[in-house]
Amino acid sequence: MKRNRINTNEIEIIQKVDEQIETLSDSDHRRLMSVIGSYYRQPLMSCEQMRSLGNQLHKSGIKIYAEASDAHRLYEKAGVTETDRQIHWMYYRGLRWDGHVSYNKMPENPRQDNKIFINYGSAHSNCRKIRYPKKCRKTAWKRFYKLFPKLKPEEK
Image 1: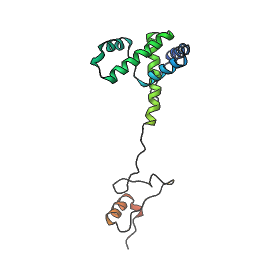
Image 2: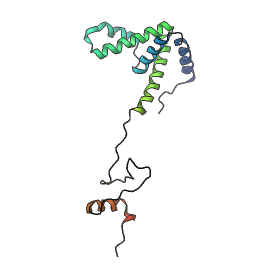
Image 3: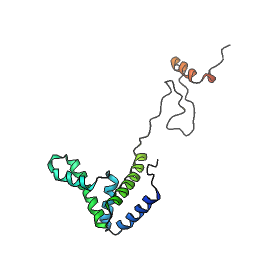
Image 4: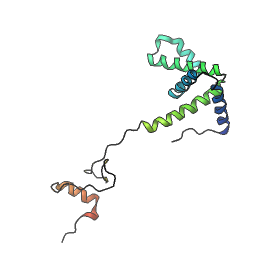
């Protein structure tokens, strides 16, 4: 699931910004990559305006804008321009998001055969088998034969 459709010009900009960021210390570089992977891109001007509001924001909002302005400070320390940092930030945020989408998916529970859809096996078996109902369940057999008419015994 790739969302990052970028052209060759943007690839060159990202590589140039990566080289500029390498001049930062290890802790600054780690901090910058952590922030741009965790938060959506915030323009520098809006970060300054929101930080000036101070107590009017919720604690999580204050944290987001404080960390975003910290990321802008680290970009400026590396000598990255405003347009280049926007492209770089959006690219790495997209990469991190694509990785998280696959990890956040919870495993699906096995479906049951007592409805109108076909379910092969269960979540714990390695092969695909049809699960037959118990012999004493008459309505379950009726539904089973609706799902699998080929398995219905021929009446004589």
